[in-house]
Length: 395
Image 1 (tube, helix red, strand yellow):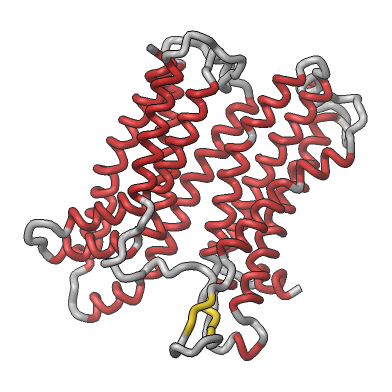
Image 2: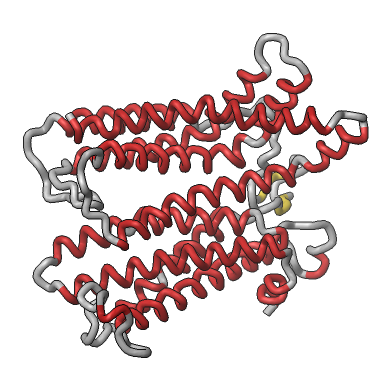
């Protein structure tokens, strides 16, 4: 009940974020149900049904990541002074954040089920002259256990991820054994800039390994039965494994690259704007770096897809389009949520600069400089990775 009261009294922007989480959960749940419907309607094509289910991993991951980001930036679950005396310590607030995430995702799953039943004609008859009856196995009884299991994937995964990410940390204090205190659930993104993120070497290593696996697998003469969305067949499994390693490497390298952007902005006798922009990027590297890396992954995948299908007429159906929109939309929304949270985190610094007489034009120029530096680094990186990722399948 407390989680529902906090959700009802939240700011409209926070409510919008939760509704977007519910919408993403609804789209992913609908994809999973459509995969089940295809398996029911095509019992002889079990391999293709399993492949369709495997391609749902990307929308599921994107939705869970977006839900966790929204949970981390929810002001209702942020520790404040005095709340511990009311029984709302870090542990209780983590539970509330987990419940809020579960409620939003469950709402989306319910919407997905209702829309799925409507298209099957189980509620008001077949819509659209029964155009979706073959895909959704209309007329066949639904396995209740399978439906509930598929619809519970996103709420359970998002809730578990939120609980792990937002769990309270404990730290020793006073040098006495056993003297511990609870800290905030999420790590402080405004940590000292002299502590760079440690994931850049691992990210670069995984990125190089993924590109090497793609190049090696692309030379193999044998084709696998794996089919990319859109009907492109003959995709070696090694190429897809290399893509996965590349994506993971970009996501891990994002915070380190963002920190490096801030360091380069401050190089060679910086002025006030470059110094503020560089220090700002270094402080926000952990907050916006990972979403930037994920968006770089999505952008490179989209560019590689356009390269692969150039000149052809791919058989891109509505479900492939929905899955692509889910992945891309969740990546963009995750970055936007992190950017808004970063703006709120530096609001005290902005207010102090304005009180000291800093012109508003300089602050806007600093923000534009940060965005430009990130675009200069991540834009070409996305293009290069996309070209190298598509090379094994186009050569």
